[in-house]
Amino acid sequence: LDFVMAAASVPSVAQQAVLVQSAAMPADTPQVRGYDFNAGVDHAALLRSYAVTGFQATSFGQAVEEINKMRRWRLSDVPVAEDEDEDLKSPEARAQVRCKIFLGYTSNLISSGVRETIRFLVQHKMVDAIVTSAGGVEEDFIKCLAPTFVGDFHTPGTVLRQRGINRIGNLLVPNDNYCKFEDWVMPLLDEMLAEQKASGTIWTPSTIIDRLGRAIDHEDSVYYWAHKNEIPVFCPALTDGSLGDMIYFHSFRNPGLIVDIAQDIRRLNTIAVRARQTGMIILGGGVVKHHICNANLMRNGANFSVFVNTGQEFDGSDAGARPDEAVSWGKIRMDAKPVKVYADASLVFPLLVAETFAKEHHSAPAPAAP
Image 1: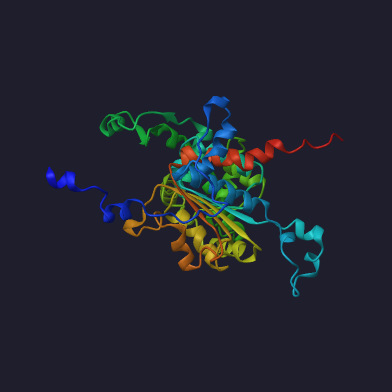
Image 2: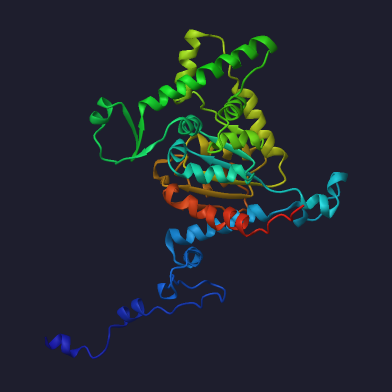
């Protein structure tokens, strides 16, 4: 006690450690401030406030800005090069050349209500090329034939199997839906095989999806609008799902259908190579993410990138990799400012679209009456 009382001042080592003097922050550094609900409930203002809220909310705000940059870019933003094509030298022509936007998503997002958000983008020609997985194709068509239901993550698999119900997270898909899909798709596979034999047509995943989109003739379908708006949809793993099951069954009852993936890789890569600037919006990981990134490698990287997934990089997975890893491969440009949002896309992507594509779409003036 006498020793403690004898210490008349704070030890210098403690004082120096705790009271380290700060350097001045740059004048333009944003200050953290969240939304004030005393101002009422303004969802647009709430989402704008995310940019300075911190953590993944700030990443969300950065993703909004990155998407808006890819949407705003025009060739007229850059000086005319000496070797520029003659038909692209006028300001008017250059203003028509936009950034090519690649959209990628995994199958679970089509199974979920995010499908309607994706359909909105495709319906209004807001993206230029799509890459998805097999389930991301077939689930869109199946939903036109029969509904998917909201269930529970914890419903026992044995109970559902006995009832012929399949679970996707907390979504439920009766097995009858896939039987209806078989009834619908088998005659179309017959038609494709007949065309192959009669005229030498070689089908690719993208042309198969286009044909199915034409055949479904349903405005709820993503791929109906992709067909209508001539937006190519690529699916390098087309056989990895129910559609693959149908192709397998079809190979016994009417064998001979050929699906050429080589044509599609050339088609996708050519879109990237010929683009003046590219943007990537990728929801989830796996083949979808890598396929788009690898296409952009062919042009030394995308100019704009937004990734939304929950993957972590500690296991070396491509899904979990931060955008900086893609920079090392040449899949994203070294001067780009890519964004990764660590979040469930079913929560985040509809809000991203609301703050970008949809906001401008609904604020644009209506066309003049004839």
